[in-house]
Amino acid sequence: MTRRASSKLGAYAALSAFGLVAALVLGRPEIVALTAPFLLAVCAGLALGASPRFAAEIDADERAVEGDEIGVRITLTALAPIDRLDVFVRLPPGLRVARGQQARSLRLARGERRELELTVRAERWGAHSLGPVYLRTHDPLGLFATEGMLARTPEIRVYPREDTLRRILQPRETQVFSGSEVARHKGEGIEFADMRPWAPGDPLKRVNWRATARRGEVWVNESHPERNTDVILFVDSFAEARGQDASTLDLAVRATAALADAYIGRRDRVGLISFGGILRWLEPGMGTVQLYRIVDALLDTQIILSYYWTGIDLIPQRTLPPNALVIALSPLLDARSVDALLDLRARGHDLCVLDVSPVPFTTRPSSSVDAVAYDIWILRRDALRHRLQRAGVAVAEWREGIPLQAAVEEVRAFRRHARVARV
Amino acid sequence: MTLAALTAYAFSGGDAVASAGGGLAAAGTLALVAGLLLRFPVAVPWAVLLVGAGYVVAHVHHSVVDGWAAVVGGALLLAAELAFWSIGSDRRIHEERGLVLRQSLTMVVLVVTAALVSFVLVGAAAVSATSGLLLTAIGVAAAVGAVAVVLRLVR
Image: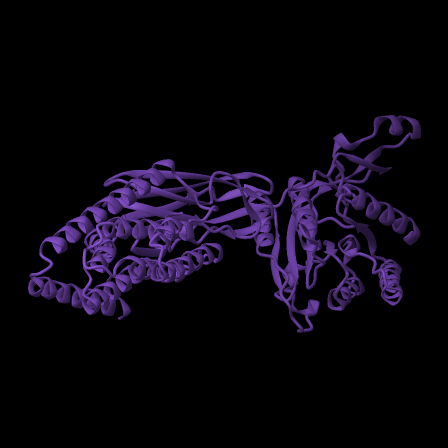
């Protein structure tokens, strides 16, 4: 805490000194009478002004979902009377006051404990560090002010609000663990695949008695096993288009959280690659713990300007397992991320792209030359999508306000068509 | 309003000297208004100084001690207190009702006490106007003390 004299103290002291000197010089007692009140105020202020003694701490809910209201409590305990205490809680971008006062002045008696309640609304996902909390005390006459701030303030982790997905993208290949995805190959499972003549070692329970009776020899059923899949969520954090309240990165993070939730719910292994100025990755894993890991990693995702040409060679092998489905969420604004996606496809990864469109965050310029440039930019984006599709990558444009499910269905339709074409 | 009343009082002398004093006081009042509008606390002591100087020019040139000086001193302190309060207050800060009442009460007590002290001083000056040595010594001591306080604050 820093104690400082207010401008009032300096003004009163200067007036007192000047008045007394003038009274002496002019020899008029009236000037002393004019000066005496200010001198009295200075003396009283110096006598009453003491260093404040109090304790303060701030507490808040640590986790919330976008749109939730978060309770913030500031506890103040006075060890000595405080005539006036100003409390100001600074809120980071993404948090806004819903109820209560962000700045308050109050008085505390000796030993009094006061709890100030403030309700803030989480308007944007992220790890928000609350505060700092500024504290300022005044003596009774306002001649001294003591200022400081709380050293430790809580961090609030606001998770993105997720869309509900009824159907998700199915990978072309499955892994070895059991899960909810019907594998292409035949094995132990419950999904009927085919029939074949009996062979030594086939269990009796697999005999198809109807077919056996009809054909005169023993036939058995074959089935597809239910396996899990590996899904890698690839978030492009090289560049974003930002509007007043949202950005392409916000949409990408929300979609990533929704996809991770959906795949984890199917017992699939899900990994994360944040591909941008800072390359971050999370190896595939399954279970609720992995979901929290992914969402926590997403909260730290941010756009960091970088001119470094990052390639997918930097990504560890275990983060990109073979036969994994890679779902990229990208605004397709940076050439590095586009090249990385094409590189992934060239290496045989099962890739699909959700193009988080930056177009709604822009406006078509009014001047003719700029408008032409804008139109060319739109056309180049279309050409880029077609280039990816020619490479066998399913691409769907997704805009704010359109359900994520619609984009997912578009990708599903493309992949269904591509699968037939491959055959 | 307090300073405006003091300005009117300075003008009330009627002669040219009173008009000059009134002019000084009016300038002080305008300085205070400007300071309040611009939220500039440095303007407050200058405004008080000008109004006080206006009063001195207008009324303090007689052989008899002006008894209203105590009231004028209290009024100047009241004006300064209100001005600093106004400049320092921020609408964005929610003040508790009890806090405002207590601050108002503190100010009233301070101003009334200061006015009473000034009355005592004016009375003492009127009674012992001829025994100037003791008064001068006290005045010198007070002035030196006040200057010392200013120097300490500057450091």
